[in-house]
Image 1 (tube, rainbow, N blue to C red):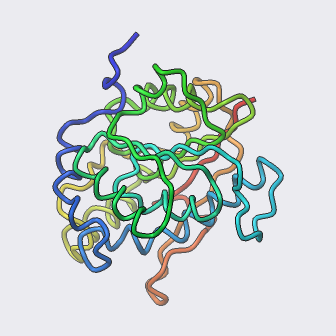
Image 2 (image 1 turned 60 degrees about the vertical axis):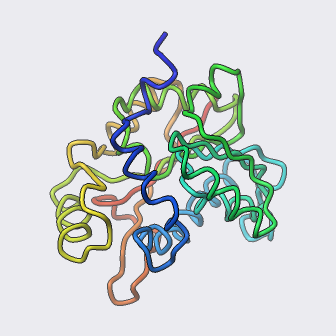
Length: 247
């Protein structure tokens, strides 16, 4: 059995995000692209969860009663809207500086989210299981994707769902997510992404199947420069999401 940190922890990546902790909720700060990206991924995840569990996606709190784990939660940008949709959310991140920021922001907004500075492997070792496990913008930062996906699969209860969003390893993704976003437009700090860590949908689907999950839905998320916003799309060449169910 691997050590608790082996699959998910890249210490350089953790340190990079730790350093951004105090500006995570600054809508005009270094995480501004994540805030603009967030509504599109929340909508895709909500719809996937509702489809899996027979919920009405148009309801005010369609995720009511579902236990959800947000792996690599950062300071809670995704965890908070999922909690508002009714989910009982636990957020974990190995970057210790982020967790107090996440907890304070949730408290300020009246949200009961259980945050914890820990890798996902720690929860797996405790025998915890969730209806939904989310790893959004995390897969492209880990050392061993198949091992990480296997950990997440172990945290999904039978009948549950794993959700991913990440970057495809294509020339277009390199041009837009690294060259344009980090070096030309400076939307992201330089070094945020490493192209060799990008994961294709086929690779992620294969890792999911090897871990006992069955991919059920592949969606793209595309930026519209005219509207200055992100939206769900059939185009998976750059950003994409994958839903994978546990039988």
